[in-house]
Length: 138
Image 1 (tube, rainbow, N blue to C red):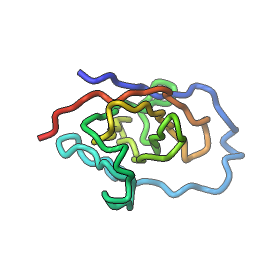
Image 2 (tube, rainbow, N blue to C red):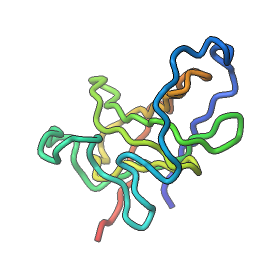
Image 3 (cartoon, rainbow, N blue to C red):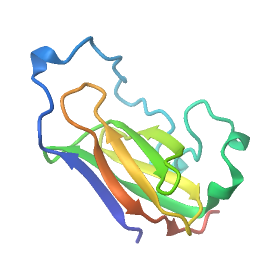
């Protein structure tokens, strides 16, 4: 069973009235780069062609986890970065139940996962020094 990383934030960043302009809402059931669990999750960023990710980040590893806000699962933008270079490797939206997953990662590299609150109510949260679990893909 792979290690699951739960990203959460319990510290309010700004008051509701000061949240700035409304953010585009992601309709229920819509997840960018994060299809239903039986389909897996896209190994690429939204709009990215598979050939545009540098080959040294490809592999048979995966990172998955859940995003929650004050203990409640939330759909939020989740980004994956290489620890050593800070390079953005992939991004996805977690589902309504907070679940996210990044596939086809080099399991010998370390990454950090950043969950970003697009509605500007909470600070971003980071899971640092995350190593992908080796995975056998069909």
